[in-house]
Length: 387
Image (cartoon, rainbow, N blue to C red; front, side, top):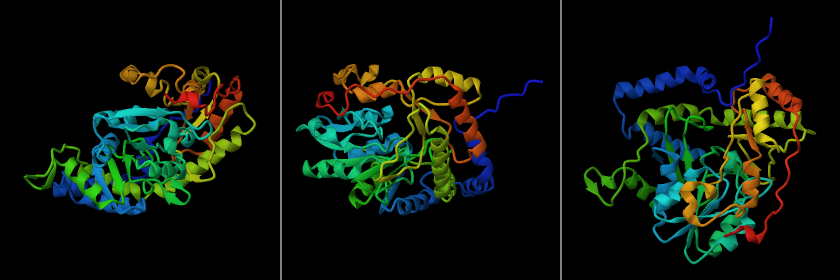
């Protein structure tokens, strides 16, 4: 009899729910009993708890990470005619949030080792219209914030951290989200801290920014029916807040398990042709994604699927090459590192409930695949990559 192939999902939310179902059901039942659905007590409590967790003073719950980015930008005064610099290698929501304000996204290429925004390329991207920088802590790996903050201070620019994939990560001992002027988090279900639907949070040490975002999320109200500005409906549901409060209590444990899984992957894949993640000396990543590079990414993915291993691709078409952003004036070759890596990056299964046996299965499948080492981009950190 033929033995079925061991199946390894890319993410296993069912396993997470099974571990905390009692706590979650109790929390949701409380909200249902209290009929406290909009900006209820759990929202306020989550805001306090998440601000404390991020080692920041204030947090404001919102309906998505994209809203968190957009309202953070608006609270910083970003609008039409302004430019905001961000990484070419990120999810499109980072650029969309900039566009929603009427500002223009300006891309810079990435560091070839960390895959995050390369601070060495920032200066040449700054113009008189530049008003802010959005460093992205991609895949849960902290961006190199000190040089970014130094350049921002020199040019009087706001820094909005895109921490949507980095709940709990640290940079030189400090939590991401507490480093810039304001930060945005996403609670999309697959995130390290994810709800059971969309949700987001802004974190800041600036009281005025927090108050402004609180009003913007709720029709511009300072108090009911007193509208100070033209706001939006971007509120975090109380049910989501209740679920997130339960999960927040487990987040550090889950993040540590992810870090241990990453170490196991590193050990198993040492000496193979695959380029594994680099942990910069300044950072403590939380491995929202565990991403390798390989030359024949698509062929490898197909092979792994045959071995029962599900994988992900983040992100196959860079933002500047998307049809939606052709008006920015970039073209093929504008950001060679991002473009080269877009065809090489493959995300392996990563979630807290992974077991050493599953990681071994994934790693053995990788070793059995015939693949070539990933080539380095022909141009690294060249001034010509900045448009």
